[in-house]
Length: 483
Image (cartoon, rainbow, N blue to C red; front, top):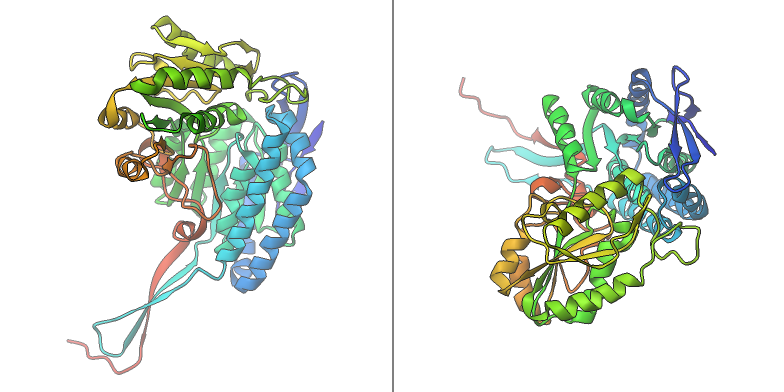
């Protein structure tokens, strides 16, 4: 069992009142982590530590910040076995998923390191004689990052990497589901020599989450907030931030559509659909939840996809036969079963999968899904994909946009010009042509529209999220005043 302390001001410490909480393995139900249950005073202390560290960190030369972030990336990769060992136990995900997490997270740190010299200013021509005017970007201060459990290394690091590159200090509010994974990120950054208080990590009991988040957002020393998680919680975070007039970056839920047109390469589309729908048990914000297939090729497509899905066996990640692993909890699997049963009860057909045992859910293909079924519109966040048959491009776009969400999408067609025209009509922050809905690169502007949130993580786009743009002038000649 892992014991997890808070990280505040460079020191590992228990909660102020000594309280702890437990995280159990979703398959065995054994306790795998006992973590400090932060108090409101601990939340305040973490922000105070970040605020105290801000002057020195923000004053570092870009090359110095870059060197520290690059060292952190190397250390993160070196600790891949540690992340895999504890991550598999806490969330039930496959070892390969955690290895992929660390690889991409290290890339995010390296990309952020490269951005330290790209936080540029500009000279703006002034109409006032002798006025030298500049638009200058400066670090905002303390950034609060709230990260989820489903891609915990990627999203935990993403919550910190660009804020740090821009010269901010940070508090990471860890997920109650993977406290040890998120705390290990803090330890790695600390060991890279960023400095005491530059990164602080708060873990909290599930029942305390709301009050801890509210306290952190309300703290006047916190200048920016970024949150990745469900749309329901994102709305609360946005409202709290708005009440304190604080900018917030939100990356929320999704109901990603993949359009399969009549001229698509069906074999390629099947591979992308299976990966997008079932990788990490469909517990990715970009997961393919809706397959919008032209009726002229639907029969062939669903037959090929069903055969593929049948080979993707879910089970204990420790078993060699398990291609897919476990969902994060039995409760999540039970919610998925409700959606599947509702669809079947209203006329959908299970062509593959459908079996759920505890937290283990098999890859499921549902054909004949219609708008009356809950799975048509509700985010399933599990290994089940809905096939919706359409006639022609116009109906495909109407169905693709018939959702509150707008994070990722994909279009399969051999006519890339046609696909590009359709991509312009899809209401999503991300759209891939002849590629899966699940795809991320550290340098890309990542984010959604509609109920999938606003703002962009990644590369240069994130600089605007985590800096203040200031107008500064120098008067170089005598100035005339009207009075």
